[in-house]
Length: 78
Image (cartoon, rainbow, N blue to C red; front, side, top):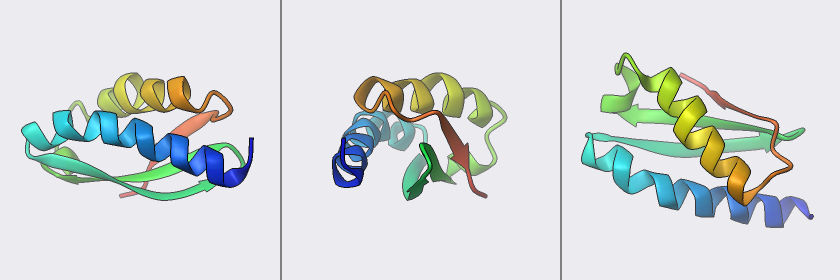
């Protein structure tokens, strides 16, 4: 899979997740994809949310891996 295809698949995954985050007053932004690691930035209410790490791993990372199985990890960059 090309870097562009991976990027497109990660964006599709984020598009699936975004409505849930927005409904809770937050959002997510893709910063970069390097060496199978996706760097994102949680925004709005998500930045101070006590469960944001769980959301990141169980929701965001799982969804991204569904679309782009080559991704190994998702990291939130504050």
